[in-house]
Image (tube, one colour):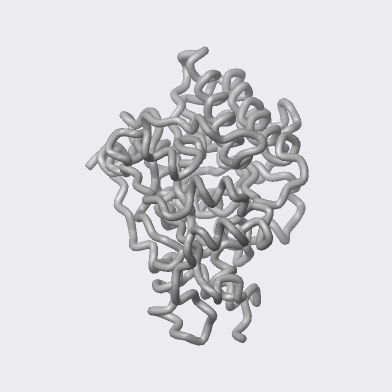
Length: 356
């Protein structure tokens, strides 16, 4: 198994340090004794940063918070100064937007360009790890029919998403392409990307900071009571994604893209994982709705459930090859059922879902 080499004599930067994955990454870095430069919009906002400073008080490493914004050119310069490794995790992940170019694509692409061009101007930087997504690898589940063996690999790129078709996925494609374009134009630092599937698990802040929380919430608020959509997707424990970043940053031979996905499950299977732990107190789905019904009524349920989305994604198998992350990063995946249960329990504890 490839082992990371943790050289803690120089600081490291984590952008979007208050984010879901970023919080666990900051924790791992502090555990190893790094000085972590955390870039956030407002370091004085203790409602957003208190969980990070509390971690730093308990762990061997040090934390320094810096103000920076994805769309503010050059705003990462102070945070990046003297850093050896840059972890660029900051990027919007939401299904609620009014202008996909302004709300999704611009922050993702311009933010990536901002951070990586700052790396070009920062001599201490030797490696940049970018949080991408499997959304940069495929657009719709039907795309798997075109790839080798019907299984996604790091060789594949999403060629079907656009501003009008899965704009979030389009933002991830454009951001990662921008990252590789900038990386290939220089030879001082190495770019490594982590491409997770749906990230699940508890947050360190105790607050919901990801669209995946909204998805898990639907299992408790009655949205899926009448049945689950026939949709498969990859899932991965947030702590495994944080570890993938650690290893992408410090395994010397790590390079290229890395799919980080623990296992594949359907909405119904995810509901069964939760029922096995919580019982029937909650309105977990007990059946899968037929695709034709989702096609018919989907647009009336949600603007995200267009007939095109239903046709191109539901009732189709989802498979991805995570062997590169296991082989080259030495990653070991944990059961996603544990992460799902912990995530749902946290939603209960924080009042996001309430027993009916």
